[in-house]
Image 1 (cartoon, rainbow, N blue to C red):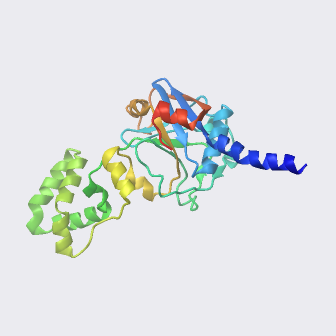
Image 2 (image 1 turned 90 degrees about the horizontal axis):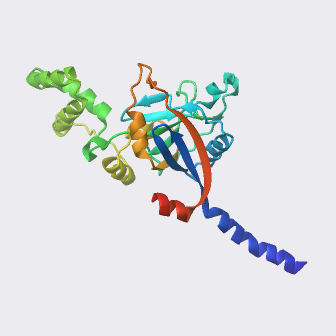
Image 3 (image 1 turned 90 degrees about the vertical axis):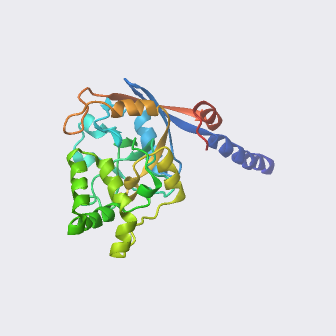
Length: 277
């Protein structure tokens, strides 16, 4: 009996090791092609919930119902599709992790606003995939809200009226990048003039990601749980993002999805999709 017990105990680490060698590969099928993703172990509640919904087929026939080009595409409104009363729309506790950021391809949970959701709990079904854009290091490390506030004061001075006219021209043409570049070009001057510091602290990981692959850095400050990452099919995300939309950010031609889960060895995921664990 003791020998049999010892054999079972010795086998347990092997079984645990074998189980951890696999992961769930998420496949989101659309008319534009397929999106492949993994879900993070650092967000176990979100990972478990997403897999459960997908394996039950509940995501199927939902759609990317909210699309904002160069920002994100949002999908998975299971509860509305199923006609569930709102009191059955469950939420998931937030699982924030500083290492999981809104870089391009990040998958995060949608949620209701802070005024009715102060705990920042996630929707039980809706998610979004980040598209975003690339930034310069100066943009990332500058508090753009404070910069704009100070800039508006600065151009109101009589001595800076020509600068104000230039800003107004850029605004009239909708050249928001030009507006930002103009403000940033005066950052050091305004810091000296008003004796203030307009810097914003970001981690080295954020700076590296947002200046290379891009993303939506301001969402890192908004309290949204990032729980996955696209590992193949960002070209499909870009195609969906380019869909024509109505004033409510809904695509004119619906982009329906089906979601499949395949348990696959981590070695194969790395080999086939280039994702390093």
